[in-house]
Image (cartoon, rainbow, N blue to C red; front, side):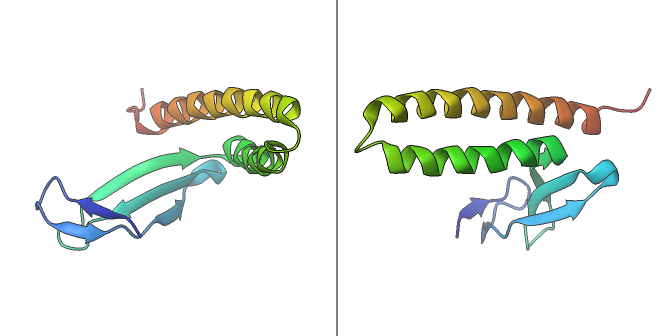
Amino acid sequence: MRVAYCNDCKKQFQVESKEKQLEDNIIKHYFKCPHCKKEYIVYYSDHLIRKKQDKMKELNNKYLSERDLQPQKALKTYKQIKKLKKEIGKDMDKLEKRIESPAK
């Protein structure tokens, strides 16, 4: 388990990851300081992001099975992983802005 340090109460604690279902099938991934209850949002995910995360897991497993015996295939898979990771990051940033920006 990971240890974190709260910016508000200045106490150290074990991170306990939590998820909360929001509207439109969006999930908020977060943890809270058990001392002062400050909430730290890790990221938001929607159906598309979760689908890409599943694909990322598949590619990581594929890469691990290829890297020693098939280095050329592994390199191709690694490039796919890098591209997908970048896409997921952009999708998460866009979703975070949509959720956390004030309604107009």
